[in-house]
Figure 1 (cartoon, rainbow, N blue to C red):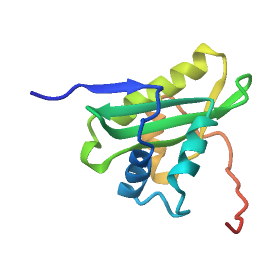
Figure 2: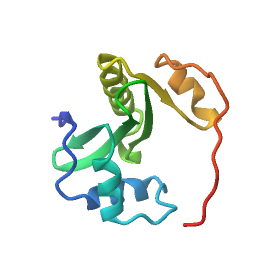
Figure 3: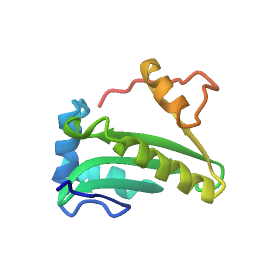
Length: 135
């Protein structure tokens, strides 16, 4: 029998699960600690976490002023659970929360992911810019 995935805005009790999730995707190039990741999540405007039982298998968050724009970021699903609709459900919940609050959902992504986000109603609108810093 297949386990039902639980989607919640409650962060994992053991934040080390988030570190493990990021490391499973090779996303922790900044070597963030569990405490830094906990702060990152706590200071987000809205977050969605996906659990298989007690195991954190996906997440995404929105950073926003809660008035105009919400930037969707950190959407990820553990490699063992990809291509099962979990990322789509996380995206739907993040975008829905923005829309309920009349906040415009935006995101940045690498070019190869554009088709994925276009299927979810997003469209290219600008060029993203960043400034590298020494950490």
